[in-house]
Length: 469
Image 1 (tube, rainbow, N blue to C red):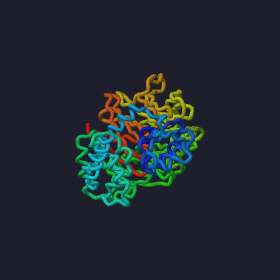
Image 2 (cartoon, one colour):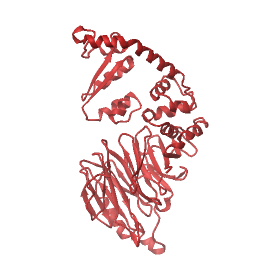
Image 3 (cartoon, rainbow, N blue to C red):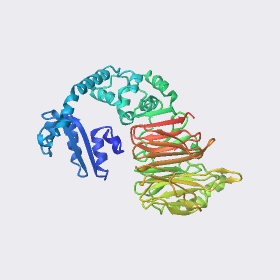
Image 4 (cartoon, rainbow, N blue to C red):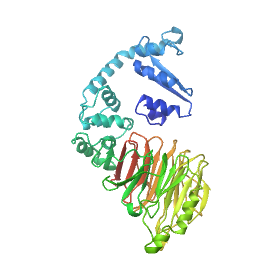
């Protein structure tokens, strides 16, 4: 609940403390009617962060009070000087009804069948989380493991169909095979359809590993999504069914961004801002003696040489029919275009965290590219080289943009945005259609497939979703 209200992702107390330790906001957290000693000890750990303040209510001599009283400033509300006599009497009169309500809620929670996916999706999600957490191991066919993996998203106020989709995407292949169809039936009225999900530990097809960066394959790998992990290993996964097509040890580690040129050449941006080139999956555009003597066109080689001298914080590419355009964002909010249409403009306050390039088809060729960019300022901006950027953001939220992708589909343009609080948005700019998905864990990368479906990359899973509309 605290993580959700503060817009961060955390599944455990340790993850929340780590997330808030890196969050510079000065925050006051108020917790009412605390009883658990373990919760009180956790709150004391939060209070150790210098930019947080906590106000906690606990009954005198309760387990929580025993933990909190030592070393914390205390206001004893039993002291008459802090008491409004009239309101105190009103509170005393209301206590019996309050106790009866708590008993009724407890009885309702105990009646939930924790092995029934339909029941847990319809029940109080906080009660289900507490019940699962109290279990020593997973005796529910993988349902508990999936719930604990995506619990923060599942506890949000949402339709049953949305909760079932999140839980379905979190199940691994080791789960009871009856769980998938039961959850899928609950998603029937929802906006999303789950095409596939590969979760850590899956074997057939194998989980491709943690995703740090992702891009749609081109050239020889046009039917694949390419993903790079924190060690720089590049994996090609087929869009259709998530089966593996290839794997390479990458030329860099700590890869933050990945993009693919039209011929299959892979560009990677490491955490230091350097661009690395991998041509092992690239298709040769020449043949015979010419290919032997000069396999790389001069224009492309000049572009790659130029990129080697640049530094950036975000990377994307576009182009058709042998043309190449590479886009770099930097830490000062600038977006720069290299290649056939060189240009640059300042779009963000602070670091650019993601860029995406889209070429729209027009009669007689390609239109000028559309460039989307996102930053730590929580804005997604739109710009086309040679023109002034749009003044108003395409979208904005009070958290940083993590990843972007854009693609042209049979129904028009599609934009995908991943945010720092775990929300993924899918947009059709032409008709303002928008769908959302929260997997309950940090999203590292997003890719839009040619059919408009959305591929979401995370540390422990990769999923593909299609809009039912």
